[in-house]
Structure formats: structure tokens, C-alpha cells
Image (spheres, rainbow, N blue to C red):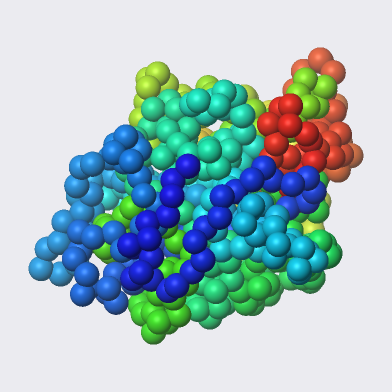
Length: 535
């Protein structure tokens, strides 16, 4: 396991020497949140570079890990950025691994006495232990796109030297180097250029330093855990959250989707942070931001590279930010003692080929017959008739695998067409069929879908325009749902979170999430190491 670089620490705010982590205790555990650093955190690092220009641009003053020569070689040694007469700029596409840790006093041997004195499991500013969040962020100056791949912490994969385990074990056993190797192998050999590790304690301070963030809270969120002094209490609706409230939003898990639900909220928060904080106004908050970074971050990025990455992220168009998640499904509790996220490697290869320009098997996304595209509709306007009419329109255009999912939590002015698994071409084809809506690449839609349509109020605008131009339904082009879809498909299944279409005569698996997520879901123990939840 990497040790701390004490010489680098002297230039930073003083902190305790990190303790040696022990096996995590049973019980609910919390959080992740580094999503802020997954994107906006990198931009904040860019701003920090200006405050540290007294140090050589080629230095790594925020690096705390002391990597061996072998570990350092796992990361790219080639140049990422160059400085011109203005600011540093990227010289090529770059892949950055972002790891987030949430460490309790009970995780560390040297903090055991503190644990006993306090009488609860306190958060500790440490970068060791399990990585609760893993992101691979690709900055591509050739296409002016930013791709962010969320890797569920329970992803079942092989970790070199430790066998088949959950991927978040890699940081505990070998720090950023072993984590980078595990992620690269999961993705078929994708190059990892640099890493960033950040502790959860920095997120609250970061959000406060940025002045808070505006987010729509999808449901009332209430949770209490006295063992950690963790208290969550947020009301549904548009909220302006401070740092502590942002942590509550991202740590809440009582929605039966476990870590996957948290990843979806992570992406919602990430877009909000990008929209609201990646601008020149951030410069006025540099003193607080610098303090947060120094106390809670570890990265092998140089100042020049930090400035180049942040400058690129600040200029990327909102529509060019693509948020993905490793495709897969939950493990069968009858097959494994612990709960895993089981990757779908065929879909993962296609995703990596299209968004990370690494086509190991020459697959990529293939042209898909509309009849085989799984399309979910989430209503945000409380108009069931509109949902049925939309299903009819899609059916007439050959999209027969369409189903209604649970309503989208936030009322939308503009319909969102979400490429759930990154298939941008299919999303754009549906946009062309509908003639309205905005396309997004993210994983916030229906989990079982290829494309999710989150229906907004622009549906009415479109219908009014159609009526005004005498393009309403004709006898030859009847858009009624009853004619265009089989009657057995018109029924909305009464599942807990989302409805699954009947695609064949074979019996459907039980997708009620109470069964799909056993009480052991979220365990950070190996297959034979227990099955308690980690909050």
C-alpha cells in the first residue's frame, strides 16, 4: 500500500500521518461525493494552479502518495500539456482516474482509541481504505468532448494479486496504482494517464467554498444513523444546498437502488456543479478552494497539467459532456454470498470504443433496428395520455419495445432524450422521429432501457404546432396507442421502481427491487467475508 510523502506534506496544511487501515467493520457506511472532483474538482485544481505558480509548473505539490518506480510506470509518462504565451493546453486526449474515499475512525488501527473516546465512528481525513467512488474521466481536445465513466464500487472483477473481488478493494490493497491497473483491465486495457484521490471531508468544504449548488431533490430524504452521527433531512423540490446538505443528497441510499441510485444522483449533481461553477467567478473563491484541495487531495498531476485540464473543462459545451456507467446487472443472491455489480462486457466494449476511442474488439455501437431498441418513457408533466400518444408515435416509426417507467421526479420544460448506455446515434434517431427534445448521454434514466425519454412541457408546444399546421393525425396515420402496440404490451407492470416491457413469451424475471437488492447489497466484503451493508 502506498505510504504518505512527508516531504510533500510540509508544503501543505499540517495533517495527521495516515494510519494503517484495517478490515472495514460490519454495518452501514457512508458516502462518496468525489464526483465534485471528478469534473468540477479538476477545474478547481486549475484555478489553484494560479495560486501556486511560485512552484515549478512541472512539479506535483499535491501528490501525497510515494509511488515506487513500478507503480509510477502504470501511469503514462508522456507529455499531456504544453504552455504557450497564454495558458497551458492539452496536447492529446487524457484519461484521469478519480478515486473517492470515506474513512471512519473504526477503519484505522491508530484511530481505535479516538473511536472509543467519541463513542461513535467519526469521519477521518484519510485517502486509504476502500474507494467508495471510482470515475474515469476522458478529456479529448481532438473532439472537444468530456466523457465521465462511473464504475460501481461493487463491480466484480479481478484485482492483481488478490483474485476476484469488488473493484473498490484495489485502493485498500495497493492505492492508486493498483486501482488504475484494475480499472484498465476491466475496460480491456484502456490507458490511465494520471490519478486524483480525494477524501469525502473535502466535498462539504468545496461546495461551501463555491457558494453552494442548486439541485432538484427528487424525494423527501430522511435518514438517521447515530453510530456515525449521520443525519439526513431534505425536502423534495428545488433546493439550494450548502456543503453539508450536498453531502446529505449524495449519501442518501434509501431508494432500493443502492450504489446505482447514488451514481445517478452523482451525475445530477455533477451537471449542476458544471453549469453553476465552471466559470470565472470561481477565481474569487480561490483561498477557500486552495485550503480544501491541500487538506483532502492526492494527485500525480503537475500544475501545468492541472491548469490545462481545468481550462479545457471550463470551455467544453454542456452538450459535449457525456456521463456513463459500466453497464451490467446485479448478482443473483443465490449464486454469491456478497452482492456484486456484474459487468456486461459486450456493451462495455462498445461503450469504451465509442467514448474512450479504444476499440479492442473492433465493435463499437452498431446500427440497431428500432424494433430492438428498449425505450422507456418517464412522464414529468403528469399527463398519462401524452405518454400513451408518444408510445403510439414511436410504434408507428418501428419502435415496438417501448414501456412506461416511473415518472421523472422533476417537472421539465424541455424533453430529455437520455442515451442510458451511451448509444448517441439511437438517441439522435429518436430525437429526429419526435422533432423535439434535447439529447443527453448519462445514466439517469430507466436502468433497463437503451434510451429513456423524460417527457417535458415542450410536448404541448409540439402538439399545438402540429395542430396549427394541419399535421394532426390522419385516418391513414392513426397514432392511437391501441392500434400501434400489442394489447399485452400496453399494460404497465406494477413494479416498485420501474416497469419492464414484455418482450417475449418467456416468463419475465422478478424485477421488483426488494428482491433484486437483498439486505446484503452494498457489502464491501469479499465473497466469503460477510455480507453486511456499507452505507
